[in-house]
Each structure stands twice: as structure tokens, then as C-alpha cells.
Length: 433
Ligand SMILES: Cc1cc2nc3c(=O)[nH]c(=O)nc-3n(C[C@H](O)[C@H](O)[C@H](O)COP(=O)(O)OP(=O)(O)OC[C@H]3O[C@@H](n4cnc5c(N)ncnc54)[C@H](O)[C@@H]3O)c2cc1C
Image 1: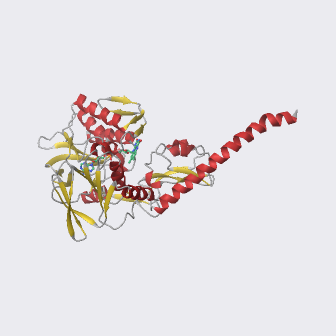
Image 2: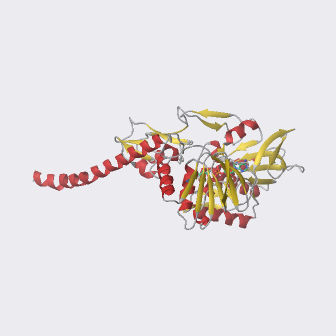
Image 3: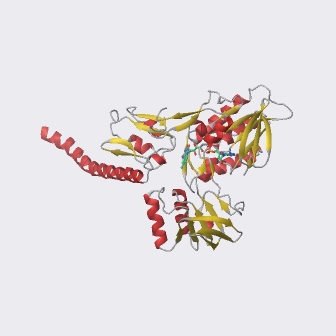
């Protein structure tokens, strides 16, 4: 009888175990490889909010690994959860939410690299009275958080004294990602006098996600539009949803207008942008943390064929394309465009190697080069951009290339110096909440 029982229970368990163990071993090996690749490429620093795992508490159940929808950001190594692709963590915190033993804490920065977080009061006002911050710039990532905070910040602004003055706006909203979008709708709802200035296009960081990327969102409420619970939808669907609300509400967003400076003058603010100047009682900054793309500052750069992010490689089919830069985004853009039929891709980089890019991307570009799909020109700089050509300086000589499009991926100017120039206090966090 006892032997029967052993067979009834122990045998199935042994079978399950013998399948599970090799699978787990394989996953552990992959996690080790990912961590090694991230270490080689010097990509060990998370951008902002990220988990730290207490190894003494972690029971290695893998719930956090499975809960992260951004890919294999976490992995199990030696039976403990580990951040194996730290630079790709977007800080949505699902790992913490699902951990059954509370082994995960979400923190900003690491002991080696601090992350600057502006000091903001519970009503979203900074130490400069009249200037408010909401969304990812304040430290909390995610579409839903930005939407909720944008709305709440305008609720606070609508209670300020001195609104409705005839010679100035009530608020200038800077940035129209999810935070600025929600804030703009709230401003419309409160009948505030406002403008929304966006250097790029509606949607902010979401608009720059790769084509077809799935966006996970928790339920959110948009003023004048309602409460929505999408769970998961594509980036294109989310942008189309925002655009539909713009049409239905008549919201006006000044796209392609970048704010360059904000100064306090006699109890109000002067906001200077690329298109003009605005006098306002208050300012809401919903500019995210990704900054303003750095420009080349060369003649011809103002043409519409020059962009600072590659969104859809298919649009470059059959074209002569110049990609400028040597980081991951430049290499990825060059490789993806080169896969499109009929493209001629040139990659110009001012240094002699791709030292800052991930090993995976360095290998990919090498293969594209060997296959004759991409021409890489190291130690070169762009001199000017013509209507049908571009001029590069290389080994002391000028060389001209036929050209239909230029993609500039040379990094960005981060928002913190901008905040400091306005007098906003910023705290540097080194691995603390
Ligand atoms: C790869 C990746 C995947 C992600 N996936 C998800 C996901 O699945 N789910 C989720 O909830 N979140 C996700 N996120 C996070 C989410 O995109 C952000 O948290 C969210 O977009 C923040 O919204 P925001 O409005 O605060 O800032 P942003 O979306 O960054 O918008 C800021 C806007 O301000 C503009 N701006 C900046 N400076 C100026 C200036 N000087 N003048 C005028 N305009 C300016 C910018 O052009 C931009 O449009 C992801 C992020 C990344 C990078």
C-alpha cells in the first residue's frame, strides 16, 4: 500500500522535476549571458526608478521575472532574482507588486550613479511658486501615472490666486506626452486660459516607441473624455485614441514648438519658445525625462527630411539615407533601414569605433557592413545638408552623397540643467526611494 502511494505521488513529482530542472537551468544560463552582455556594453545603470532585490528574502519563485512585460529585464541567477538588463528597465514596478515575499524595493539611481529628482510638493508645485511638475519628470514613470498627475496638477493650478488676468495666460503647459495631454484636457475643463507647447508631436515618449509596441496601462481617467481600462494596446492605437480626443474636444496643441527658457518677471513668468514668447501666471512642466534631441547645427538641418528618431523603417524604402551617430539608436536605425528593399544606407560617426553601443548591435552593424547593406564612415562629421545630397568631412576631405533622408541620433540635452536654470531644486538620489 505504501509503495503504491509512493508511486502515485513521488513518480509524477519526479517526472515534473526532471522536466522543470533543465528548463530552469537553461533560463539561468540565459540570464547569466544577458547580464554579461550588459556588463560588457557598460549598460548596468537603470535610467530611473528600478527594483533592488533583497537576496535574503527572495525565494527564487520567478513571479517578478514573468510579471515584467518589457522583455527579460529580470532573470534568475543562483536561484535569486537579478536585474540582468538594468538599462532597459522602465520602472513600472510590476515586479514589486507580484513579489510574494516583499523582497523588492523600487529606488532611484545606484550607489555609483545618482538620479536627479526635482523637489515637488504634494500639489505638484516646485520650490519656485507658480511652477509645477507632473509626470515622469517628477520621477514616476508610466502612462497612467503621467495622466493622473497631469490632471491633478491642473486641479491645483486652478485654485491659484490671480488667474484670469486679462494680459496673461493662466498656465503654459510644456510637453504633450500623456502627462501634458491630460493636463491640457483638465485646463480645458477648468476653462483656464492656456497654451500647450510641444517640441515634437502629440504623445511624447509613446509616439517614439517602436512600431507595434504593446503599451500596458492600468485604468486611467482623462478629463472631458472619461475612464478607460485598455489593459494592453498598441502604441498606434493609443496615439490614435489621443488624436480622436483632440478632434472631439477641440484641444489645440502647438506641436513643433520648443520652450527654450522660463524667467520670473514681476510676479509672472515669461516663457520663450522657438515660435514666440508667452506671459503667464503659472507653468506646468510635463517634459518627461528623455530630453531634447541634440542637433548637428549645420546648414540645411531645418529641412523636414531631417529627423531625430527613426520610427518606421518602411518609410525609407528605396531611399538614400544618412544615419548620424554611434550609439545603440543609430546602429539600430541603420540596420533596420538597410533591411528595407532598395535603401542605400550610410552611417556617419565622429569617433573611430562604436564603443558605447551594445555588443549585439555592434555585431549586427558589422554583418550589415560585410553584406554591403550599410557603409560605415568613422571619424566623419556632417558639414551641410542639401535638398538632394549631404556633405561629410572625412580624413580632411569633403565627400558628397546622394540623400533623401537624414536621421540624427547623437544623444539629447537632459532636462535637469533646464530645471536648474529656472531655479528648481533637484535632489540627487543614489539608490534610495
Ligand atoms: C521603451 C519604453 C517602453 C515603455 N513602455 C511603457 C508601457 O508599456 N506602459 C507604460 O505605462 N509606460 C511605458 N513607458 C513609460 C512611459 O512612456 C512614460 O512614463 C510616459 O510617456 C511619461 O509621460 P510624460 O508625459 O511624463 O512624459 P513624456 O511622454 O516623455 O512626454 C514629454 C514630452 O515633453 C516634450 N518636451 C520635452 N522638452 C520640451 C521643451 N523644452 N519644450 C516643449 N516640449 C518639450 C517631449 O517632446 C515629449 O513629447 C515606456 C517607456 C519607454 C522608454
